[in-house]
Length: 508
Image (tube, rainbow, N blue to C red; front, side, top):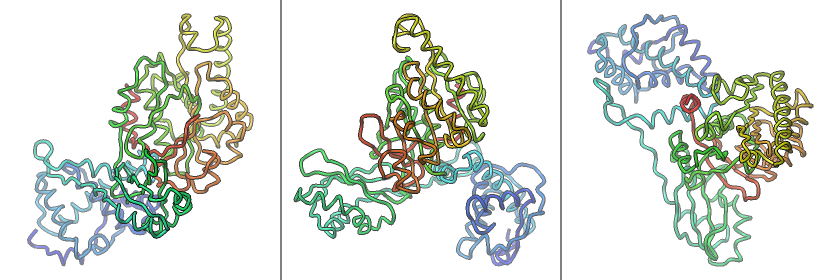
């Protein structure tokens, strides 16, 4: 492209196709970006990570924007070099002038915008999930050519966490606590410091001073957390780290965590995520026996629910487990359509269908109790020893509030299931993004002992989910507090699962 200079490119104007222009506008709105150029850069980069451009005619009917909006004087040479190299490696027509360059940029923008829009839809239009998809895709790029003729791809290295022991000791001193760090363990998102207090009488001062400790360590709005240590005068202080140092656990990590679970189908083990130091968090839903998952929009509630359901499907067959899925908002459970695990071979979509399926579930519970009575046993476990084999039914309601607010009678039926269904082998997972007393009444709360709280906006919402504050101070993006029946609350970070990950397990 010797006939065109970088200065000429910077003085030019560029446009994409009409279709990509429309998608660019939509992506601007949903991602909160102020200019088309911001989306264009994401789209061009998305396309450049792939192979040859498809052979298709791409119109140039999108609105024009200046090159100076897309590139800067500092990075234009890099962008031009990437586009030229991509064309050379993948055998495209040589870029020999401004018109050819415009055409290649238009095609990359066109392809990338469509792919980004698909990414947004596949992440259930959840901002954190979408961003995690982009970050994970870049982190997974190989650092050497893949396959014949493929272009080299650069692997983006994670920023390693740093030891802030000295800063922590100084910050503790600022709040009047004299201490020494005895060790540090870097987890997926937080670093756990093992701290020895010189005077145990300063423990109360430390508990009261966590907010000032966060200020002294420049943690912005994020709070360190305090827990008991393993020896006298030892405490554990978990310090949030910058997002660039986070490590995500994905589908394979979840499946690896389930390898220790017996495949005989007599448990309902679920894995919502990993704990603060990266160990898998597991529990048996059968012993809980019901679970509430709550969190604000975009904080990872849906991905958490998928992790729970994938955990169950991975260790069961349709003979030992059926899923009764309730989707009143008609957006969440489409990936499970036609699954062999569906109870009644369908998903209840919309409030009327959900109401009907809840009635059927209550009738199923009553019928199972009748059969248990005939056998003279108290639960399905004992019944199995006498030849009555029925699958567990896990009923998962995606948005509890939509059902309860539109039909108050449904709440009473859900309460009845929560009170009685355990012995009949029926267990509930209730999810909501509007945790308040209207949608999660005291009677229902008292019968749903296991809780998972993702990030919420207010302490009062955390109180509704956990009976304790704290979820309002979580980090978002799947950060959660898990409170199980008869145990102390614990911090965890959810597995990141794409819809493709979920589908690969669901279709087994």
